[in-house]
Amino acid sequence: NRQTNWFPIVEAHELAQAHDLQAVIPPRTRVVTHSSMFNPLVFALGRPVILGDAAWLWSHGLDFAQRENQIKTIYAGGPASETVMQMLGIGYVIISDRERQAYANINEDWFAHYPLVYQDDHGLAVYKIR
Image (cartoon, rainbow, N blue to C red):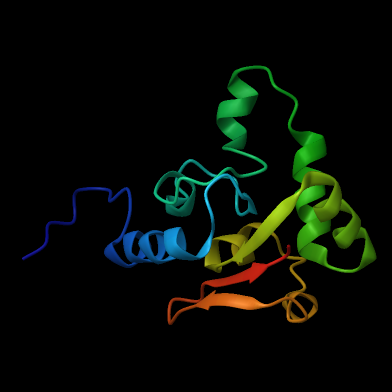
């Protein structure tokens, strides 16, 4: 019987996702994903992201507003998204329920013109940008 008085850092399916994506996303390839210290794909995948945890950055006095706006632009899709992804050297875009919750403007239809390199039953989709 599972106790309910603990907070899991990562669920089993999230570790499985990270393991699967290590075979899909090459090392040192820049990834766009939700910026949170609780995003298991950030710490379990081991790939560089364009924005880490905003609370951590804020607590160290780092200005992350511009990068956060760039992420919103990327997820909105369209020509501006393409420009920002090229400028930042983005290799892959991750869309999961975490991104859907954090960025209400995600244009998933727009990302469909990129190769879908990973998808699972938990709502995770990964698109190869370059």
